[in-house]
Image 1 (cartoon, rainbow, N blue to C red):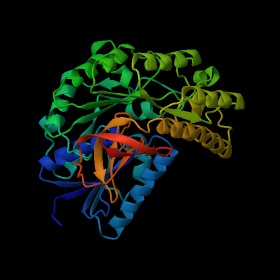
Image 2: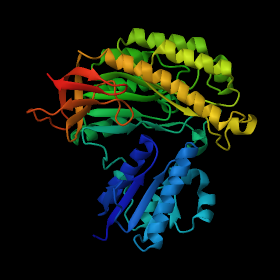
Image 3: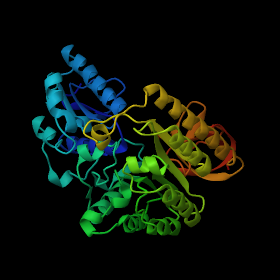
Image 4: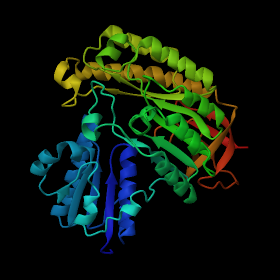
Length: 432
């Protein structure tokens, strides 16, 4: 084991992953050998990048820290550092409760970690990243923070106000990633459509995506985490204009009844939501919409939930996730509403909603049987090559399983695949 090995463990979302990759890039430039999410941690130094979004994520982060504390107590680890969202929000409490951690850093002061372990903090390398994804795709974070103060969400408390990155800095990063072999860009932000308001005094997401689409070597662009209120419709024009922008949009809608949208502080109505989705499907034919919905928010009645179920049936979302409300201290909902819906009712509603979606997903997948789709190959397994269509984001969406034949497929290459059968969430196909 070399002295400068270091293990980096990332919990939570892809935005956290980008922070870990930036840290690893600077560590590597200082002579360290970073290992990301090793199956068996072996280095003497470990850094845990935590998530603090909802209760389950916080619990996972705490358990991971305690596992590494045990490794330190057993002499398998000499230094343990913690950064990220959980640490940003609860640094004082964590320092008191888990003193075995050598130091806690927040979400934005983690560069101090470099100094503390004896690595050089080189500002000219702040944009450099050591990619942890397969080399053909990467995440591109275009902003931090959020100015939307939804009743249930602690993210503005953790990350602060929305802060856009300059467009020229983002484009330079895209060109750098393409030079490393990246073909597919996943554009991420806490709130995509707000991009540019702080820097340019207007929504600039459409112009940014238009410029990224023109960078030579960018073959697929996918858009994550839009917001329905004041959605910039010019973005749909850009999506239609460029063939390398995937017909895919991740837009968290959370609920549909006007009663709940008001309680959640979503600043959008049921009628506006239905109209927006209709416009998206009209302006970008074939667009696959991914959304996230919430059940069990304080005040949700049976009638509200019935409206939500009907919404899912009406919209037939191509991709949908859902989660049950959990009270987050400091949020508007935690201080102004009483969480009276029992965990059992929340789980029942969640199960009902996902059962409806499972049936819809199975029907939509079945409709793809017989089609020939462009697929990017992500990995090789024992019996299959596994890839994705333009309608699928890594790790969260369905995959295409291509049975191995005498043809050898290259990871990261595109190929034409005829869909031969389907399951509720995955497709099966053959190379054309």
